[in-house]
Image 1 (cartoon, rainbow, N blue to C red):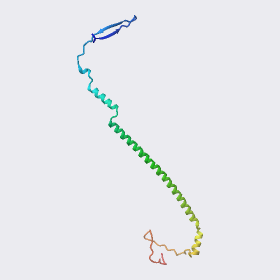
Image 2: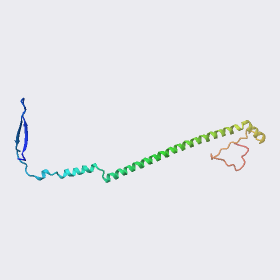
Image 3: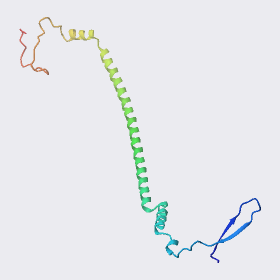
Image 4: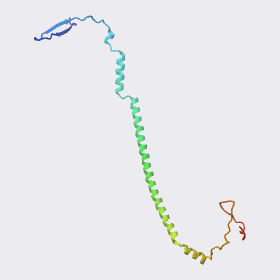
Length: 162
């Protein structure tokens, strides 16, 4: 009777509770089937798979390492490019400042050249020192050229005619 199961029942009521102990016989005995008590292989495989998924295997570590290296290299390349862009921008600003300085110097030299001689001084030098005179009516001869870029003179222009 060591294998008998005991079940205890309590009776509810307004009086003091008494504990009744009844011995219940199983309705039927299970047949001896050894495969019922053994765990199926699918559970064992699933447990092994779950255990493997919790850990880091070699392939996963290689993949993570490669991805980290790619990420670090791309960050270094991005920082290098950003540094090059900053250096280029500074160089452009420096060259723009130099260009502005050169243009202002050029404008100052041009103004000084324009103010160096007045038109009256140029007329005095041309008529007094070089012997030049204004043209008279009829001295200017207009010539129509078939080419627009330049004219080559092979002989003297005739005195008469248009």
